Image (cartoon, rainbow, N blue to C red; front, side):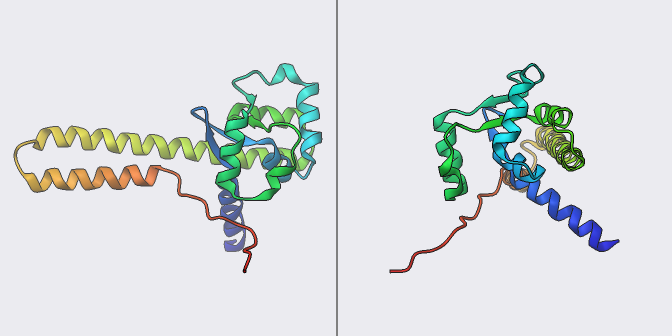
Length: 178
């Protein structure tokens, strides 16, 4: 039982590391999704193109060259370099729609896991928002009464804001030695 739970956590962590923030939305890139679905990126995009009515702009969009360069610098990997076309980015709704386009058991299973991760992210963000609102309310109540209490609220806000920001990714790849 513990092994299965650890495996689920590892898979969810992998999915979480593949979610990017582009144009104010949490998205996943076609190449990462194709890898998880065990299909070629080309095949995934072919299915999307064949079913283009299912993917309006709020479900999927093609990223710009500038966004692409930013992604490459975040990943610090050469695997992004071989593309001929700019990647497609899928929102949570677009990923859900992929399950109706890709009709394999793997695609369905992966989609369920991805949607669960997106749901947890949303719950986590709402929890942090509620805590910040409560802190703000308490801060107004104690304003001017005690400087130490105000300092505690400042530190708590900083901690919560740091926790809500994504952690920088480690660079991967080979190191060259002179």
